[in-house]
Length: 343
Ligand SMILES: *Cc1c(COP(=O)(O)O)cnc(C)c1O
Image (cartoon, rainbow, N blue to C red):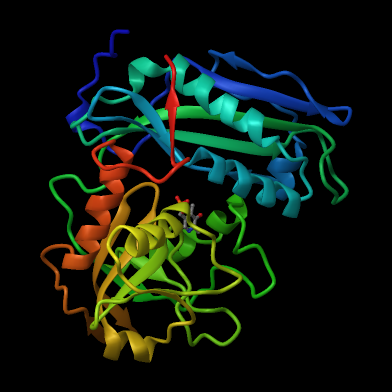
């Protein structure tokens, strides 16, 4: 298979249309058998439920070329399961897990020419999503749904090297205490747009949201979970029912414990504790794996993490190197983490 003529090293994080995407339609109480199609455009009724009432959820995962030239995906079963819970909470039908995995295999294999080569720093981002399709004007769930999955090659999240971020404590809330924070719904992103534009205008890279009920503990950013390293070398991450369960964060905790022998805690974390007790901080998600945070600004009060503003903290770096090593096939993966795509 010949690769597309793409300057892999120059790729940013933007959408590029590829040759094939996967589509399956839900109608009369069942999913059709699904197919790969070449048209990147979607046509639907002006009153489609997704357009009026935002009934949609999505996932994000990546395909990689390993050191020995195989194409693999990382824990796609976890994305399938998370999409099941998102769909159920939004009163959408579940797209079965075995079919989700088959769709990932099909769409990555069909676009193998777009999977960036090993060592380029680029990867193939896979975007599964689902939306209420038919016309709905009275507020209720749709009765017809579209499940789709496209891929797009993306560059390394940090071009020209990893640089620690400056984040602010946000006055906006991301999710209500018994709301939708734990599911991957488009609506959570719609309402984060104002907060992120405002943060950027004021010179911050990201918003850290606090727990919406008491505004005393750390939750997460708009699109990434938060992980800390304490001054005595423990890994600590917030626990809350309004945080999206990041697959990267859960994988990093496993790697910390099982590969690096570190102690791991999941519990509420206050800002006061961050100030006194934390040495390193990182944001975890599929896009960047870990983005180091050097500074947290709480209404003008700066918390400068000891890891500093020049590079990743030493333990964050170990976590990052181990997980990316597993993804790229340089380090033995735990059973079931790597799904090889046969091209
Ligand atoms: C997708 C997402 C994450 C990261 O999850 P991963 O599975 O690691 O990619 C974190 N927070 C939010 C709000 C998200 O939507």
